[in-house]
Length: 328
Image (tube, rainbow, N blue to C red; front, side, top):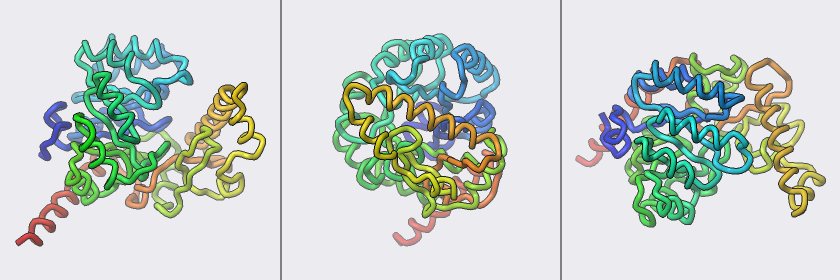
């Protein structure tokens, strides 16, 4: 066991969260994560309706023999948020990760039922804000993260947050090895949130083409694109991405800055981008826009969730032994 706030609070063996990934995370992955000594989180938006989400929650409560979490997008783009909060309050997942907005309503309605509320943050200001609202911990989304990454590397962001807020800090981004796990724990993180390496798992619902791309491509092949959601998002630089480019065109960019229409432009951009990502995730298509982070560098085969966890822990032990041996 590796002791930390994360392991002590949730009674897990290893301080690892299988990060919530849009379209990728599913119940089977969370169940296997729990069996492997870690815990997983799934976006509520991975189900098309609140009714489907509630059925999934029932299944997780019945079949997941360990802690699990739900990721909520807490801004106006998520039209299902009120119902999702209601369902979370009813079924009380072990934790909720909030993203892209204020966690105030989630804290107020879900904490009383024993759910820990952990908030994605990219800077000190927002970490202090969620601390004042009563959050239980923060996830430091650093520049190595997949999806919507933060601007600051873990080596700076984790210590900055440790020095300026009193909440446990979990690092998200760039971890694909046990040595990487050791490095962020040594910075003061209470655990890590790992996403991209778990795309290429047997339990993942995405297409084999997507999984093979995670195996085939590496850190150098990850680029930031504003075409997916309107804000920079990490994708694999496939030939199709190279063809369409990674920046919004001039018209889209100008409209996105127009005060009277920018809200609707952002919603349309997000919708179009998510449909593109969804179509590529589940079927063979030349329009391959696959979200992933640079930690795919360390993935060289498709394997079960359990084997990825075992490899990370084995590598952690080896890295720790090597470090201690050098200290004499």
